[in-house]
Image (cartoon, rainbow, N blue to C red):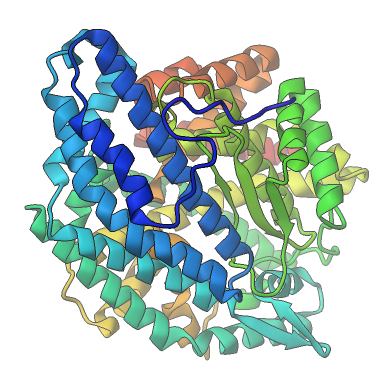
Length: 569
């Protein structure tokens, strides 16, 4: 697949962003341009879209390079330059351009769903704009990046070697309990050094976010953020229903899994370092060795499902849009960053050879396919996806690839274990998603809380979603700070429940694939090709599923997982 960046029509091909003045002239052009016809308006939208794509891609590369090497001060400075010198100055122009768009008499001539959804987001941005928030947004973005720097600097010593937290966590799957305990305690000790820094950072972020909400006329940041995220298809009450449904329908199943694990291990209660180990004493799954093998086998699976999927990953590799292996100084986690101008995204992850890495690869690969499938949509805004749709692509891919994991697991027993782990992880992740989401609702409904109150609330919520089968005696401080590992709380607030909603959708896609694989894959592609040109429920409908997180639907999907697990066990 030979993909090149489309030829620019508005900006010069050699355009660089090293001063605000170079950027400003194009905003001035758009702001001052006379729009006398429908075709003028259409061209104005296209030029604005091109400018947005160039700016967003420039910021993306600064972020990508910084997260690959957090120790390089210049890369951090390059990112900070954009955040401090460019972004704050974009806001007033974006507001005025939004007003110009919204007030144009030609707007009503574009009444298809795609433009209606775009124009709705523009009207929301106008509503939320506040001059006082420009500097606060810049400060918030700068502080958010501190989380990655703090986390990226965390490592431990083991057997005379300095290893990342990601690599250290793989030892928690080892059968030797003394080794697991040793590693757990080393990780906990290292993280304890940053507890106060992360507590204070989060408190500062909450204060800034609450002020942003107040300035925009909202009672709290949660209500502001729901509007900013464009949550037009569900409410906070739906989130509360999701929380309760998870407690009622999923937590009991997770408790059954924990009880079975404890029994197999000959224990009444599990220890905090027992969560990842195989209860029957089998060695940890090691599906690949190194990033090259991970990529090659993933490409093979993707090609089997649909040749186009494999071509997408190969194109990314050829263009240098992959950084897969964990290394010192690299930010934790994994992501697929869409690059709107070239249309070929970037996958970042911290692979160390674990089964979890395989899941991350196919997950981010699903996001990547999504970017390819909507790269030719006319406007950048059509490709800017709500997370409920973005995560549907990635979580569905995890399940759609499952029957092809023999590429990684030649041993039938290992393959079964991998599938069981995937399904049990889905059951376990849903309560965690609800836990993080419920925590955020409380945090921003009560922005004046103390650090101690925050820890107490976290423990209370953990208990509500917990199984009661893990003994944290002697490690109470570790447990009360487990929320600090969740990147989303610091960098992308309220972006997490989408994982739960999309997980339900992905299970439904998988259910359809078991009945008619070819049709399910085609509908999956049809849905992803829409970008954000239809409402969330309509996109889910195109995928052959419903956007539904009711107790009844959750119960039905949980039953399906139980049946699948019984066949594998």
